[in-house]
Length: 206
Length: 214
Image (tube, rainbow over all chains, first blue to last red; front, side, top):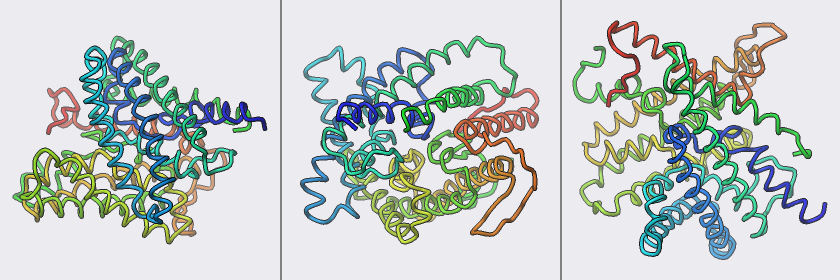
C-alpha cells in the first residue's frame, strides 16, 4: 500500500466508515443536546475539530516521551489524558479570549462543554493506544498517522453534527405522532442517518 | 407519588424513576446505546458504572469541605478517573469481556452522568445520602440498559445467551437483525422514550407529557 493511500484510508475510515456519532455512539450528549440549531452546531463543530486535534497531538507526545518510558502508562493514562484535555481547553479558551474576541464569541460557550465530551477523550485514547477500532491498518500509529486519524474523527463528527442540525430544524414543523414529539423523533432520525452511514461499511475494504 | 418516602430511601428511588439518568436527564447515552447489544456486556457495564458512581460520590462527599471552589472540577475528575482506572485494570484480567466493552471502560470518566452527580449532588450532601444517590443513579442506568439489551438481543438474534448458556430461544430464523446493528440502538431508545411519554401522558391526562422535572 503506498503512503498517501494509507493516509487517505485512515482519514476516510475515521470520518465515515467508523463515524464516531452514528456508528460508534461516541459523543452523543452534545449531539442531541445542541443540535437544535444550525448556527450553534457549526460553532460546536469548529471547536471540537480544534480541541480534538490539539489534545491528541499533545497526548501522543506525552505518551511516547513521558508515560511510556517511565512505565506508568498502564495505570496513569486515564487521569493524565483527562487532565491534559481539561487544562488544554482552559488554555485555549484564555488564548482565544485575548487574541481574537470574535472567535471567542463564536466558540466561547462551547469550549468548557468540550472537556466532558467523550468524543475528545475517545479520539485521544484511540490515536495513542489504537486497537479498539478494527481498521485493517497496523496499530501503533506514528505521530502523522495519529494526527490524520484525529482530523478524520473530528471532521466526521462535525459533518454529522451539522447535517443533523439542518434536518432537526425542519423536524420542528413536521407532523409527528404525539408521543414521538421531541426527543424520540430525534432518535428515530438519527437511526435513519446511521442506516445511511452503514452504506460506507466495507468501502475500500475497511 | 411513589417516591414520597423520606430521606435516603428517596435518594435511591429517585435515581431509578423520577430522575433516571438515561430516560429523563438524557446523560450518559453513548455507552448505553453502544453496549446494549448483549445482555452479558450490560451486566458488566452496569456493575462498573454502579461501582464508580457510588465510590466517587462517597469520596467527593467526604472531602467536600476541603475542596477549593475554583478547582473543584479537576479534583472531581481525578477522583472519578482513579476509580475508573481500578475498574479498567480489574476487567483487564478478563480479556474476553474487556475486548467487548473496549473503549467504554476508560470513557466512564467522561460519562456526564457521573460528573453531573458529583457536581450537582455529592459536593453538597452528606456521605450516606451521596452513597444512596450514587447507588440509585447507577441502578437507574443499569436497569435501562438491561431493558434495552434484552429487547435488542431477543428480537435481534432470536435468543438470549448469558455466560455461554442459552436462556431463551425463540427458534425463529428471520429476526430483524437491524436491532443489533447500529440503527437498532437509536430505534430501541426512541421507542423507549415514546413509551415513557405515552405513560406519563396517560397518568396525568391534562399534562403535556415528558416534563423532565429536576
